[in-house]
Amino acid sequence: MKKKFLLFTFFLGFVSFGFSQECKEYKNGTFKLEDKELGVTYIIKRKGNIQTERKLGEDKGLDFEVIWIDDCTYILKSTPETSLFLKTEVDLVVQIKNVKGNYLELEMHMKDHDFETTKMTTFVEVIN
Image (cartoon, rainbow, N blue to C red; front, side, top):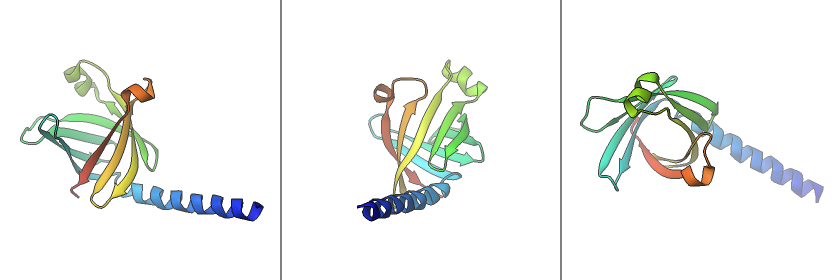
């Protein structure tokens, strides 16, 4: 019994490590988010500790500071300019839950708010 538990624990750790390594590939890059409900497409560019989001076809973008918690989880914190534009500060916790081909499954929720009421899952396409 001990042997099976130890083997299961090792396997789970190995799978988690492999996925964590995969998440590292997406710390920088360009992504596309299509909001079919609103009929809007966003282009997201992340480089270093800055993420810029803009609507397709518009020049103005919103900047967020990226604070990595671990290889698959980060916080998007609105910059002062973005907070002024949005008229509120935004702290969004984002976790890469899965990688499916050219798509990342993201689970997001507002930091310091009830997880279940602010939780949202979406897919973004990896452009490069």
